[in-house]
Image 1 (tube, chains in turn purple, green):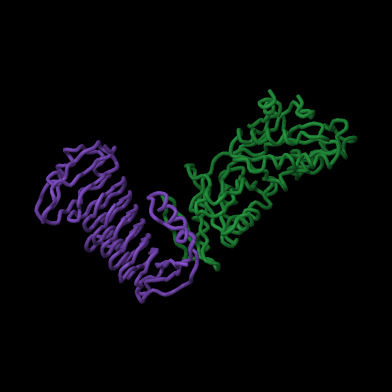
Image 2: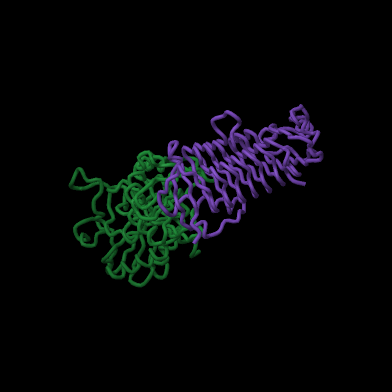
Length: 254
Length: 300
């Protein structure tokens, strides 16, 4: 048994299950019964977390969630600390407007991971999200601070409208990555369809990239190669339709 | 007490509390990390004239640096906590920022006392600088003609010890220099200790003030100058014709003691008559390194 709260999905939701109450920092002081009683929205109707999940483990700042979570949305919303580990694929709005802590997804995540709520000017403002699979569209949308990593492919609009922060995509990044970005970085280790509003600056070794990639390798055990750590990157500044202080760093595989 | 036939005098070195930071400089190759470290620690022998004391602690392999490149660890000391960031900002800005391929990291990351050095250096970027937070630490990316200079935002500061020392009294200058070189070789690379003077050795030990010039803070240590034996209150024993001093700074007193033990043992070689130490009667510095006590721990 883990020394952490574990939520195991026992009843598959028929509709989208919005579980924005689930964040390790907010659950840290709650017992299993209190956690099971937290409100969720199932297909737009009120329900309890315990209607779908079995809650085990002692109160802890770490939270594990297991099961096929593709219909479970908004996990880790506004979390400010602690660690959330998800074993399996997860629905949209993961880590919505997250402010701190770590989310580690052993699977894929749907749209708007680390993104912003509708109408909000900022998405994720701190912390780290690692998705060990593919991500949907708008991953890291309006990113303000923090690191978001996708080890597989990312959908449309990675870090769209980012204000700062860093997104790392190991696979292919879909069209519109970095569009309307003011500041911030996209580190593209795979192919990326670059918006026309980004302008080539130079090819060089950005000194923070080895630091970042080594951190991801040590902290999360991600499959970062030495060639990626020590390699050269093409720097594209953008979005020139905005402030233009953002960047896409495209790894030059040699 | 004798070590290898060399007399260890019954005296002590008197040292001061200083403030210390550890700077880790990395480069594309060890050569460039060394180049930056050498410039950074140049003209940093004594707070008397340089306002700081600094030296290379050791070279770091790729596995021991934050960015996986070869590096050099530097200890940097000043007399008070106000002047430490001032000196670091000026010197890092002129020596490490300017040096090709280098990056600069804090070597004392666990300390709560933080100096905003990188934060001050960032303005060289003229608004084009940016920062990244990785693993809870903020780094500044400063654009330069070569590419980018990366520097950590803050550096840890702690109390350290400056002015540990011992004197090598030898029958002639050649034997004295050989003994000093042997001592420095033995102490080079020891953790938490630096030897801030040229080659680790001082030929011009000083006393406080002057007998003749009112404005002088320090003047020649005439009791240990062999050429003045006949006209001053000399402390040089019969048969000694040359004296050299080894000065040690470090992060803590036990590390300096350990280094002195190694250095003194290495200096006790043919041609050396005795080992002594510099002090001010025990009234100025809070750290007293008693030579015989230090050497007793190995000789029994």
